[in-house]
Image 1 (cartoon, rainbow, N blue to C red):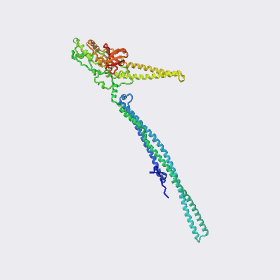
Image 2: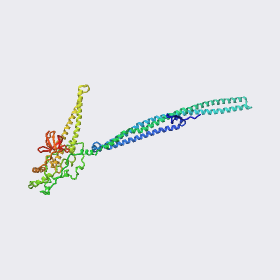
Image 3: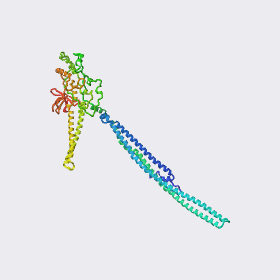
Image 4: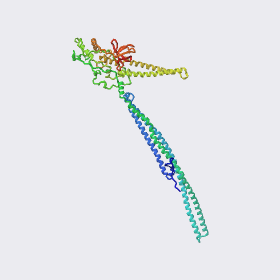
Length: 618
């Protein structure tokens, strides 16, 4: 008889290589302990992998948390200086990188969440099912083995009984034969010995039959155990283990697929970082810096030479004119403290943003005197009154204390009309304020129209609502519109040429290179508007004396302009014009919103650029 084989061979479809199918029930009929250890080791591997993935998710979560904290640390706070710098491309690109890193952290959190849901929780649940299934199969195998062992014990007991009874029967037969041959034994003794031998023989025959039955039963159960019960249980354990391996393999694949699925989004985040780097434009940043901090003021003119040697000695000049007014250079114009650095290189004072103090009064503007030649023949009055001539020369050399220099020595004050800003920045801020108010007003207008339409619908169909219920909202919207229109008119007036006096004053004086009569004392302190400055009065007196000798050089016009609106020209240095009037353009707008023009009669002054249509000569 050929031995049984545990390997079932079959030929593959192409007929080239045999496919070997292996079943645990045939291969491991006597390796119960091996299967027990192997399945236990497989379940422990699953637990180990779940623990590994959990620790990986913790690493991802900590990494994402650290990235979020990092981006939060370097994001500028609201209202800080860094937030104001975001208009520059390099600052904005850095903020874009922080946003991309924040999104990148979100993707790392998504990876951790998907791994926890799809791998840890799913496999852990499946692992519990496998443990229960394995326990059930091992319990069935243990029961079958216990049943076989019990049958074997019964077989062994019957076998030992049969052996014992057979020996007793053999002894009884031998004793009966010996008694029968003994001449001294009685007939009764012989009969008794034979009966005893027959009884023992009968008992031995019964034990033999019982032993044979138990042996047959045990062989049958043993065959069932090794060829049916245990192979079936082992095959179930094999199927369970293979499903475990398959599930674990899927978990291995999910480990990479979970991260691969978010890779396109992570790639977009990295592309966003690259794009942020390519969006940096150094030229645009330079232009933005100019647009943000351009003041609109012109550069100050050259200081003239002060010659004290002609007709008056220095000691006499210092003693007699020290209280009237001494020519001051740019550093003196900044105030009494000459140790302070020039304003361009000093830190600006911080201004509180919670309370807006009232705006400072605007100094009255005076018409700058016409320039006179610095070097020329002395006046005929010099021989009669040398002091007046010297004062005249001093008056010509004194530079106006323009508003930008005058206010730099003190803390700037935030005003509602942005008067603390240079002309160019003030114009931009006012325009921005007008745009914001216009947008709010448009929203209120749209809401008012919607409420009116709703009210009409309610009046036509009372079932849809009560028209009176809309009255409070309509009244509130009307009040908001009235308030916004008032603010709009107020800021339109602020944006008008009548209030842009700082830029107009500086341009007027810088172009004429004359002096100004401002309500500030020579030492930089403020004086009342109603109190005249004695030195200015003296200068004006001597200016009138020599007015006939001064001639103004006329600048050739560079084009023409046509007035689109009426302009009163109420401020000093401006000129009136009527709608449709044609004027000659003498000087273009230099960024402060004013253009210098001239009439046919020779009168010159400044007009708002937005009020005229300009046509420059090529």
